[in-house]
Length: 153
Image (cartoon, rainbow, N blue to C red):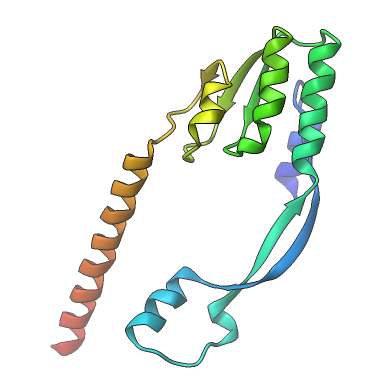
């Protein structure tokens, strides 16, 4: 909450927050790994709420359009990996606004990159994401083997 308050009061920055809705429950990834190795009944700790934020995309899209039409800005920095912003990016760029994209390292689809003028953080490719997932899987397998070997001693 403190971070949100600081961002909301920062100069030259707009914080847009929507409504949080619970869209059911999902099994945690760590629990899924354990359940696939040794099936058992689910517990409350195995679950997490599937939270969805509603209304933020449209608010930001409207802000981008308003700022573009009013000649209020010459450039925008948008922190997202969400392709729902492509129409807003296109609109702003047609109005002569430079759109800078920062995905905070998350993988984004090519359409979002295509409709931004500059990427501020390195955006991993699909292959890089795939290799990283495989590396993490191998690491987890190694850790499990080490744990099993230690327990066997």
